[in-house]
Image (cartoon, rainbow, N blue to C red; front, side):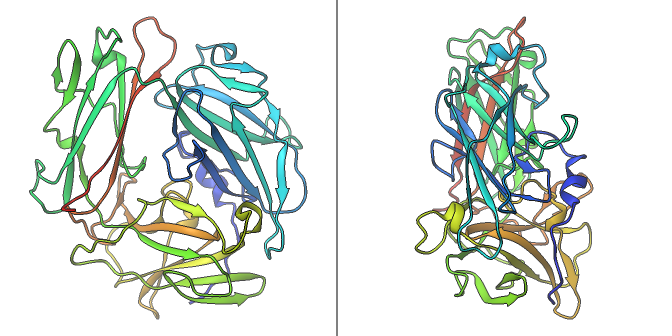
Length: 416
């Protein structure tokens, strides 16, 4: 069942066809790209203007590389805000080297951990909105592609956002879907034409593949707008995420069937999951993850990399390819996370190189619109506890960029 698995240049192939709003590696040598706001790794990459944002990643070697980071202000659709001068959105000097780095200690897989924060002594970000940070190798030609992109949003909370989630939807009642009702209050902001000036994004578990982008409101008032009884805001409910934890590479952790050394890498074989027929509650973090290791004071440099083998026990499924996914995969669909069917074992399998820690994951099947579906791989149950996030941008007439002025994050609790 095992297969030799190396880090492929599929990272580069995948990057060319994807939008720029994802935090992701663009190099086979870069892993564990993370954006952490307010020093909490479980929070969405949305911070109030002026609050700390940290970006970190690993390069799979102990050889020092001089990396340069460059910051861009982006519009609501993550296109570059070309009409805004750099001096408008940042104070300081762009294109600075990353000076905080450290090599891994006592690990089988050698890596160097790099990190930097905003604000810092070189740069302070000034405007609310979307920011994309691109990291370049200083040893490359200036025309070369970046090795990674990290995306986050800074908020000036000037508009009120109320979101409610219900299992009583326009297509079913307490069955397999959840529906979002949304309202936005303008506050002190003057909005003349909301359909032109406002831009909204509604996420389920921070996913971009099924996000609802810029849906026109169906109720307009002088003080705000509302989205009610909109079928476009109905989401398949999915099921609770699976989880595993590897704190010690010598012992089986939570969700791990067995650990194997297969030169030159360690391997963790997870217990096989199966599509569910009924809802089962299991506490999770909606696809997120934490890097950590047992008794390690510095997991950033002491945690090990190993191949984690994901298994989905089911007959071959009709339809699109099956992927294992979570907020750790960089983007969906990530070619590295596409599963193959092992007829002898009767399951889908996929090994992925990951850093020690606690992970949530889910199996999704790619449909014709490049959206991950859970109906056949997991099941869809109205009780599932999902996170819904809403971002509201405003560009009044004459403005040159989209300011992020409204934000809401709600958790659907089912029957709990």
